[in-house]
Image (cartoon, rainbow, N blue to C red):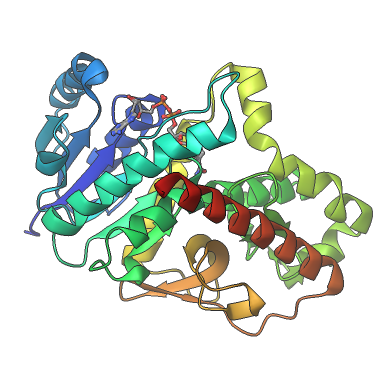
Length: 331
Ligand code: NAX
């Protein structure tokens, strides 16, 4: 039998946490043959609710779940973890300045970076979900210098999956037959959902999405804004932000990273830029990646047209500004 993998979920008493922990305990993230021990962290005001989540995990009698740590102590939470899913953060409340929200999250991610660096298992893989996701991940990277930068990522898979969903609905095809969309850049409304290299499996073989949709106006307009603004549309409809789709996409992100992407398929992940596609280094930016043997690599050599170039640069620009704002909170 396999040794259990320890998975940390921060903000585990929140909405995404509540959807995510049962998925992990059922094997959705790491496979149906992989036992897990869940580490759940939240802050003291949420301690009682967190304990309620722990009670429900016990009550669900998940065969793969070999233990649960529920704590408000960041050191206890981080000790020995192999995977860390960082969902906890400070939300933007009405009337708050961007700088104030950034400042709260910078201090959270700075201290959690140190705890992970000191106490997590060697080679721990980190996924930051909490917003501003790319910049929180960058702060975590800066303050955990001994964790390899390849191990620190942020979630743009939800945006990627939203793009697949929109194409599938538009063409009335199975979502599993659509592949290789790309989310470039920031997990924000400047992200660029790109279908220029995406394809659909048809009885006549793989066909480009652009050819099948045959409506560049929609693909360059409404499709992009729908994906960019989907989070707001969910809040409007549900009165709460996306939770089940965020949790499911976080599982997809980790599963593909650990177990690999299928041959011929790529996914989107926020990773530390190495300058590929002339994206500035020093940013956590979403790229198309393939994964093998527990490592991601950026898909190289895709042609970028002028329309796309502008959009790649715009979202990079926003990330540079967020980075500057985050650094101004440190001093
Ligand atoms: P909730 O407010 O329901 O839950 C957040 C939880 O984090 C709360 O239980 C809170 O007590 C806890 N928390 C706060 N500070 C903490 C700290 N220092 N250490 C540990 N826990 C802490 O928010 P939820 O809807 O679950 O969303 C969580 C985060 O995901 C938010 O930042 C949200 O903006 C972000 N999202 C990111 C997405 C992505 O694709 N990257 C999509 C979904 C979501 O909007």
